[in-house]
Image (cartoon, rainbow, N blue to C red):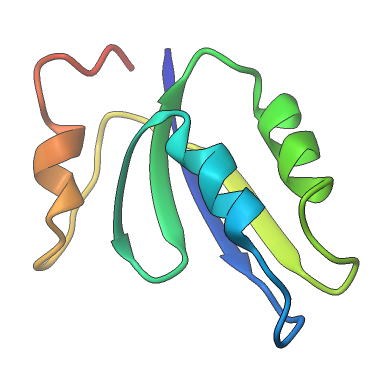
Length: 89
């Protein structure tokens, strides 16, 4: 399993982006910032990107990054989630 940071700018006003959120909620996840998700999955990064690409408009932006075990934050509740012993990295 890997931990990925998924962030996006969804730029189509009035567009229903619920399918993006439904897709990301399928995974074990933590979301405490407006457009930043941390997800845990065994899927390859390209598969996540391609699935999201099908759910967004051509003027939207998505970034998917595989995280390593080190991290630092200020007042970010998902750090507790990231540091849980159950994370397999």
